[in-house]
Length: 378
Ligand code: COA
Image (tube, rainbow, N blue to C red):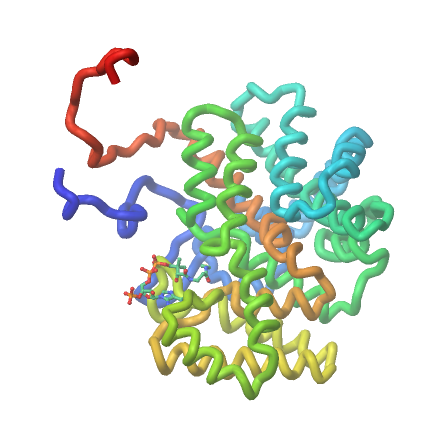
């Protein structure tokens, strides 16, 4: 083995089969279980996509009603978990608190060692039902507000707004949010999903795998980019400054957040749909600030594509869209988790359905083998 044989960052390496989703860089497209993601995002609610990702088929109306009833029955956090969350350091990043809270859910699960596939599905649904309340509760506690309990008569996205703000916005805003949930749900062997599969492959359990995946997603080269995009837009400051800011950033070799992708090289099929949702939010809010972020993002996009031929990824429109929906910037990646929990757990089930421990090789570059000198002779 020489260094020339090594696939650094596992780039281009195919490591397993999957039936969950297909990323097609040659056409910049993505399908979940065979359906184009943009069709699912525009024609279905996120709950239908979640059902599809786990069950392989879109639900009928009665299957969806049963599925939603099950999700509603699994909502709710224990007082113990809420008490633990009250003690979290106030400055901790919400991805770190979410990682800890999900790990705590594992402590509360009495059947943690059970790896039966039907039990995994129950736990996946339970995480999908509970994570939004963890994200909303953490937001409220950090802001000195009392948590708001979930409401059984509200669907997934509406319930999340209710638990954050005590009210549900207009249907158009909920649709923009719900669209983002579908677009973020699944993306084959990205870093966090692969992390989940690696952890699951040692038979460590679903909570360990999801906790590891949350840690992976937190980084700015992965899910953390949607937050980093918004901080970047704030730094740019005005639409007029956007082109000059971008040219300067490129000249000084800065990584521009929300651009580029390991697999897609000439565009990301999720971007047009999310950009439409971002624009819809700009029109709904209608403020000068909202219009400014829209103009700014158009100018950054055009400059990056024309100067470097590097295209925006989903985080580029999602970050400012979430900002206009009223979410604090550090909540953006936890919101991504609310959606990606579906993809992660589908992959964990797939991995454990035909498991093989994931354990690659490494090319050793340290000292040659040598003798130990006793401590009194060193
Ligand atoms: N800003 C500036 N240059 C970028 C860039 C970006 N966002 N993304 C890629 N490039 C450049 C690299 O500097 C490199 O240039 P070089 O060949 O002159 O050194 C070239 O494009 C290849 O990039 P590389 O970092 O090798 O690609 P990768 O596949 O390892 O990285 C990402 C993919 C996503 C990690 C990378 O594009 C990135 O860091 N993007 C910003 C973070 C982000 O938005 N992440 C969310 C991903 S969905």
